[in-house]
Image 1: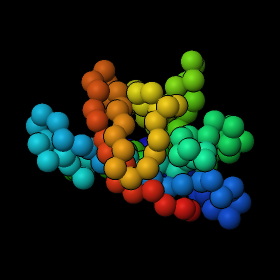
Image 2: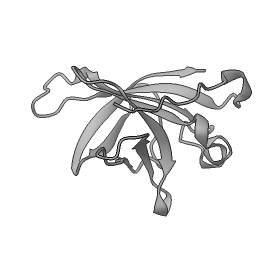
Image 3: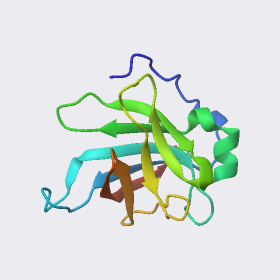
Image 4: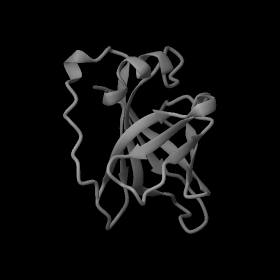
Length: 136
């Protein structure tokens, strides 16, 4: 568990492009129906095509957050980070033994309900489905 709690986000100070979206584990071996309890909750700006807006991310990177949820584990809190080469990942604050997780082609992905995205978790790819997208 992260020992530092992130500062609260002041929603009213963020541009209207900011969204709160949830990714839930999609169907895969070991989870034939998927698993709604294995999820990520992300706060980030989306552009007019529902892709992560890198320009607004740069201007408001402290507000771009991620929560990693797993059954029987404490939630991990972190930030959406822009990686070399234009990719996106999740960095968990205060978690020295938790490697960053990497979104597979997140720069090209559309974050709309029903779309599928992939995340590399400790060297293994998992597919997630966007289950909700809402304004802050």
